[in-house]
Image: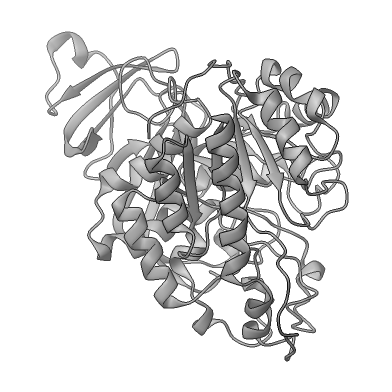
Amino acid sequence: MELGSAVRAVRSSRVLLGDVIQPAVIYIRDGKIESVRPGSALSEEEDSCEVWDVGDRVVMPGLVDSHVHVNEPGRTSWEGFRTATRAAAAGGVTTIVDMPLNSIPPTTTLGNLDEKMCVAEGQCFVDTAFWGGVIPGNQLELRPMVWAGVAGFKCFLIHSGVEEFPHVSDPDLHAAMQQLQGTGSVLLFHAEKEVPETIEERGDPCEYSTFLRSRKDVMEVEAIRTVTQLCLQYRVRCHIVHLSSAEPLVLIREARAAGAPLTVETTHHYLTLSSEDIPPGATQFKCCPPIRSRANQEQLWSALKAGDIDMVVSDHSPCTPDLKNLDSGDFNLAWGGISSLQFGLSLFWTSASGRGFQLSDATRLLSRNTSQLCCLDDRKGSLAPGYDADLVIWDPEREFVVQEGNIHHKNKITPYLGGTLRGLVHATLVRGRLVYREGSFCPEPLGKHLLVSPRQDQTPKL
């Protein structure tokens, strides 16, 4: 099967249909799944169709990573659509949703959205949707961006790290909520707030514990308290991005029990890395909110299993090597962000498979629920007739080592370098076209822009 070619049918002894792994043949026509036939035998009329037999490799819906910082235009030296979407394809990710910052300009106006989509045109190896942003004073831009097809909006309750995307105040939040009422759109929150310091914290800036003390759990607790109150008041869909602390989970459960249309994500790094294992000066581990303790991590896994956390994403947030300040090892000065877009499926499966999670859980948490968040669940995240033929073909048992030579995002800095992961992606299909296979990519980008049709007053059920 040639890279870039349209695949007519895929057969495997391990296809994930619903919650069951079974032999099946998936038939594809015009980029859509035409039918799925359990079993591996072909009828006489089907015999004439070229079937790609992938043996016992697992076939699942392609991943939908709803939290990716591509950074183009403006900071393309950090990452760009071409490199980010190649990395996505290599990891079985068939759809990404681009965050409204750290590009210049940020996606906070209709004009800036148009500029970003123009820059992305013809560069994407996988399908790409776009988040808009909420900043002080741009509330009248929100509805035009909803009608233009953004998946929703992101805001910060604390300094974002870049000056062109300032954080919002309470009046800004109320103004944004009023604009979003009745649109069916969703507001995403970076849920940390500054809190008064009772004791001045000092310590060696090269020790991770010093940085960790500067971003206490209470910052997430107080931010999520604000989010839950707004969600209940306006009944606008709200989503907490990259939950790192288990402490706010009680607030989340209470708000949902009261009827809040609230969803929550965590990331691969919070589920994989722990603060106790971060060496001095290892600034490639810095992110915000921070990586916390092993005990906290186990609580996140329990919340994921219980359904208190709805999905797992990469929060791929790359930068150039100099911004990580690896030479000084100063956590305070280093850029906060972790690159992992390519390795999300493997990171999740490496940890989850030993905790009783099944392959169906991987699809639910990494594909179906993420597609529902951004209202792409009518075409993405399922192996069913009428859905886009987005497939990941992978070997969950095979291990591999993360090396610079097999990393496809632009800058190779990642805390996973040298680590052994379980679950190797063999091939990726986007709308029935073979975009990635065993380290090689299709000659030209085949991804499309995904514009989201507003669903007024509808809350997807996760």
